[in-house]
Amino acid sequence: MRNYVILVWFALAISLLGCQHVPKPASDSGVVSIDSIVVVEVWVSDKCPENGEIITARATVINKGTKTQVIDLKDRPVLDLAVGKVGEGAFPRWSDGKALTSDLTHLELQPGQSKTIQMTVTISDNTALYRAGATLYYSAKFPDSVEAGVSFAGPHGCSIIDLP
Image (cartoon, rainbow, N blue to C red; front, top):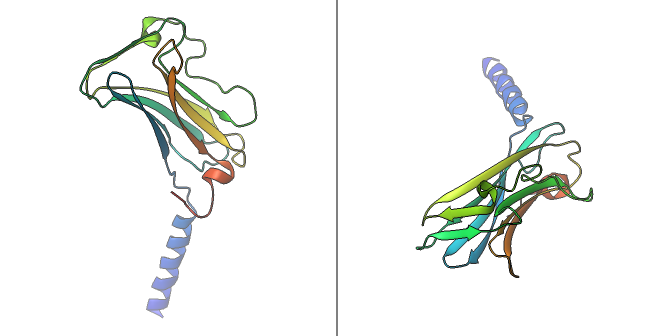
């Protein structure tokens, strides 16, 4: 009888713990070779969020090369991040409302250095597909950018089988 009671308590504890939402981060990266190898990465804090959950998205640019990387633009941010619900028009951007100062339009990274920006979004409908996209603009000429993106929530992020 004692073993049965312990087993019931153990099963109850497992079932309660199993019902908790455990965030699963997701990420993607894009690589460009300018004068050096530069990687842009995007990361979200949970690929299958609950309704009302606040998700953090980050964009990071990393100089993985051996040369200092300098990017100087005039009309747009060097690194930007957009997060939103797919199908609802333009996504809110990290740079929205920010003045185009040298903090946004100039980037200088020594080998091994990185820069990260982040923003948050509140999930209003976790059955909808959301997307976080990072863009590194490295030239005023075409091709001018490299991108990385992560889809999350909806059927893509919340599938029962977790595919790579």
